[in-house]
Length: 117
Image (cartoon, rainbow, N blue to C red):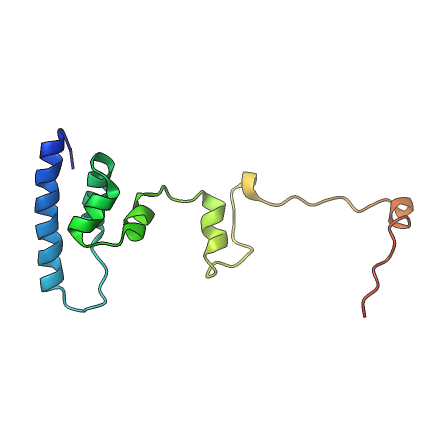
């Protein structure tokens, strides 16, 4: 979606509001999510107009619109936040954990043992 002027953006916002309303009236299930194409257009308009105004006219929650406007998280954070992925998932070399060499015996004796009850 190319936005050239504020007047053009206002016109596109009106058209997008009609598309959202049409989708709401023709959806098959009440809990169905908005199509990604509608979100993409809303995000494009929110870059040219105030996001609060876009959200209000499209009848969206501002926090949901802002979530779609945010860039995707970096690769490892996306995996750590998603609990469905096992911890041993193959990661690129720059994100793999490193193994530390064991401590020398003389250093280990200087660390007091921890007592558990």
